[in-house]
Length: 247
Image (cartoon, rainbow, N blue to C red; front, side):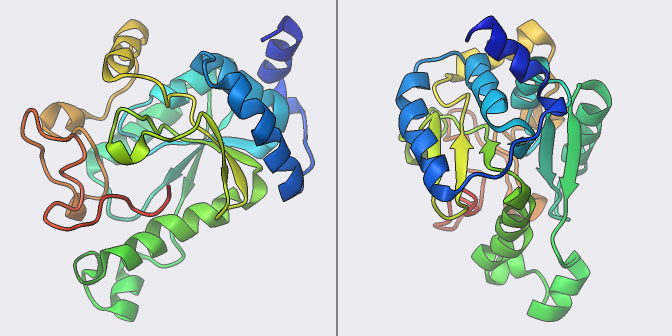
């Protein structure tokens, strides 16, 4: 990244980028994807904020604050979107609160249209048991889609090392369902790189990570994982479900 581009990235909160058409966004992806595939995560975020300005955000599930920390260093004030499903562990909400209090980011908490009680009344109690896909759609997928309407691009913490399903996650990709540019600055990071960044920078980590929960979702659908098992095997354990549908 050039000095001018870095400065633009750091000053992006004072800029405004009009929403681009789908064709324009796909064209950006076709060029930037290959160019940034091997770039450091910081440079990928710099490109995103310089390209999209206030129409770029970061999403975080608050398993840790690595991506939020990186983005906050590159572009102080950047929007960090958190989905409060109403089913989170208290430790996850605490991590969210700590991120908001300690990092130079703008934390945006998004909630579903219905409360848990309203959803129970409409669909029956414990929808996460009777129809977990619908529960995820109502409490995660649709709220995020609604929140992203004001953005052209969003950053995720997806890493190819997490599961085989994520091996092909591009650094810069096109999310056709959302009509957005999907940025994954950490896609090439190994588990060791994540742990090194956390240690070197004193990054916040959800306490549950140290209590046998390497992948953290809603409490009814997340279980502890035995040492050596797939880190995501505790998500929707005992079912064929492996993703919430966001990705």
